[in-house]
Image (cartoon, rainbow over all chains, first blue to last red; front, side, top):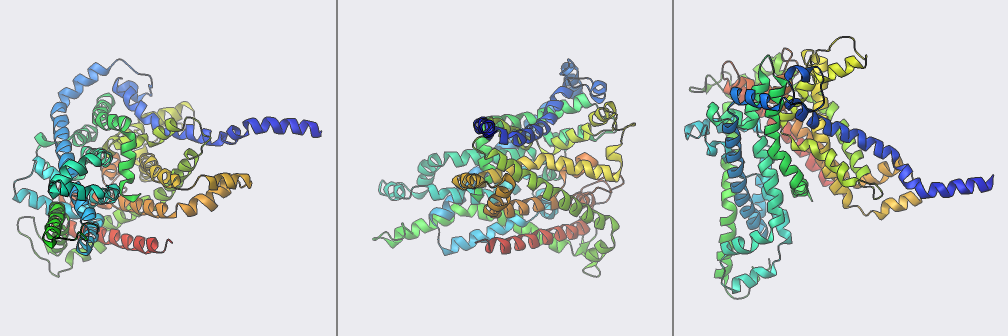
Length: 283
Length: 302
């Protein structure tokens, strides 16, 4: 009796760690399936006939070319992709420049006045998008910025979140090299340009990923400021596709796939930076 | 502080200080013009009525706010938003924290793979996943055909055509999209906790459940508070999903506040900027109260 239990115990000790984790594995597999399945379904639907999709066909089909043809005939796909790329890229570049410059200024040259200003700027975090959208729309139309890159990006170039992220991460910037650089005759902007930017590459990468994704996925503000179809973005295009009374699922999911491909590539290639970008300022 | 202690020239210090202000000016000016000024404008507009071209002061001044109190659709949109908030946010955060706890276990195999899977929904835009869920839950959609094949239902359910099921689908979709997102915060928070605490608990024979409640939750409290506030803030501004998944329907019974405000300003029908601004100002007040509560809770966290 005692011998038997001893043997069992030994066996248990060997595998008991993994065995204790069985419920964890089951839960993880379940949740991973839930998370991944809609993506798989999107891809399979994009390659099948709408009717087959509706009837529950799940394997990858051969109807991709026809769906593509239908999509190109129904919507100006290339134009919307181009617009989205243009707006997102310009917004990312400007946002990174303006916010990192501010984060640099707030942290490296900090004094009481700047700290107060910073906490005032943080208040902008609680201003909801729907509240500013009407006045911003009026401003954009007054300055002839409707349907332009500027109309799209100006409200989101400077965000408290990004400034905070750069400010927090600037704490890691070695201050000793500031004095050394000044002795070498570099002016303050040259320090930013030649020393700060190369030194903060990781922060820039995380900030770029998150800004690009936000810009690419933006929906409410583009819907307001882009009144002309020629200026529409990818999320607007697929929303139009899905908004009709009869929906061609194959075509719709192909459109959704196009809208998701850039962000999914970023996700898979730069996942670590993406995670850092999300949690960015709160470390 | 290091640079201000430089001995010789105060002129140099002043120059550096000026440079500092110069660096933060573009961002500051943009935030003032693009956030604070429009917020003030929105408040002024909320006291006016009329079409966007010629707005006049409302009679009485608080007319738009009084109208809101009697607007059944606005009250319903507030109710809907809070319903989503009360049901979805707690479920999502508990799931997220559980997943983070599981993924933080050192003995877990395929950790990176699972983490990527759980995180994956964040790679879609809000419009994209709303459309995917709309298609999955269509009357002639996959969910119905699977349930039919399993003989769970005998005829197709019109998921998005009935108020109750439409709200259900919206909540399911929100949980799907945001659980992994919040998990990332918890995982980052857990990585700051010394792992030996867990090993000690294990040696002491504490059950996983006990470890979770007595170690993880208290240590993660600041992160939990933050994700809670972020989630509530996001839910109060819910728009993309309401527009693209349910269109606010059936008959506006699933509409959110932001969606209703949009319909009143840029949607079909007449643009009523005054009234829409008044409603948006109420959303702002809600978010501000929330932020104030957060600061209070955050302050006492030590």
